Length: 414
Image (cartoon, rainbow, N blue to C red):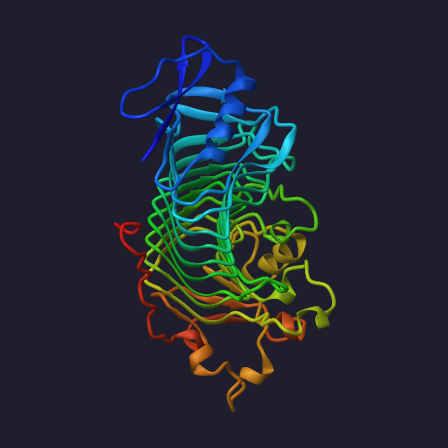
């Protein structure tokens, strides 16, 4: 196994290749640092470790790694900083097309596109990585901070994601996923699981985003999503104005959304602290209510309805007092008065007519179950132009068989 070390001496960027004993350091300017770092990526072999010591490194071009079995390691997310503020080439800060990849203990800042993208890999570990746009929320920020897609066996832990114009931590079209003990702030979406299955999202702190945790299914993608557990998270004060680019799915997420389930099935929400999200602490919606769908025939091969949803054992407080959008504001005032609030769970009410039982309710195996103390659900009944808006809890007082925990292969899950 080779270990490549990147170092700094005084104010000068230095690069050296080293084994157990570090080779003599030599001076290098930022462009040389960037060139030689990319060369290390190109020449890497399975089992190699590329170490980047403490320092602030400016890069003008995106980096890419296509070799499996490599570890990229810094000295800490606030000590080893890769800045792409002046990037002029590349769609991402770091693009990885490889398996058995670990990245840890560094920061990626101010990329014009995505921060870290890992594409089509297996056994991916992203640990103690910070992605941030340092000017704060802005539509011109890159879309995704931490972004594994079409991956299998993914662990994202102890990371920080700040000010993405789409999702801070996003896992898409993937399977067997654990997202734990991270912090997501001031993104449009704090954490998003999209078109993925077998995902556990827990122990995270998600605050000051537009929407806290999103579990989405979108059409025209290789696989549908299902079987996600969101538990033991703190999801509070996600009331940042939506700064997503117009026309993107997240641009339709109301400011003040705690958890949003859109068109996804078999989702469990339990044992979370969810509070003070001004539109609603939990929103359950179909594709038809989002505002970004086109003609109905465009979803002919896609299930747009959320089904088999189970909300239980959460600690709700506040929320729903100042919903985003004129329609929701008017509905809140009409139903609950100026000083009132929406219930903890807001549902658009769209259902698949083929999934109804003889009493006109969703079949028991597909039902939206809210078994959460005195928490209530507001059915806005959009599918019938809101002719039968219902507030209550009794009609959703049910249970589903609980999903199994996600198990990552050793040593990923250790």
